[in-house]
Length: 109
Image 1 (cartoon, one colour):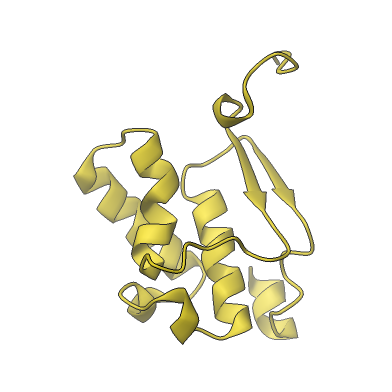
Image 2: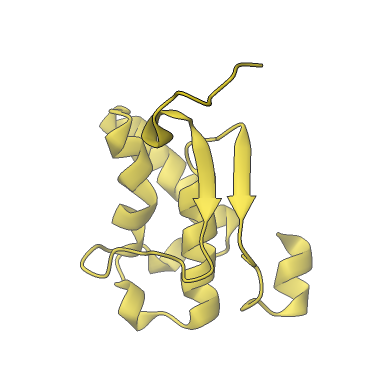
């Protein structure tokens, strides 16, 4: 345990899924998921592996090259969840993160 009161927000290692997803519209799904890893200077091979694992986790393996505008609301929501989980944060904050998912998928995730 450590006190993060005076730690800059970008250094707190906390995952966050916003209600509005906050995906980068000019980046592909894979690039959106890889973003937190790139900011942490993770090796490229490790980024590819983790992105593939995250896409599989949210059942979007074939969507990596698409843009967010080409996805449904539920798919965008899953991308946001994958991006928040890909760097394995010790804490994950979620603001209604699974509302756009159908019941079966919500239970699986």
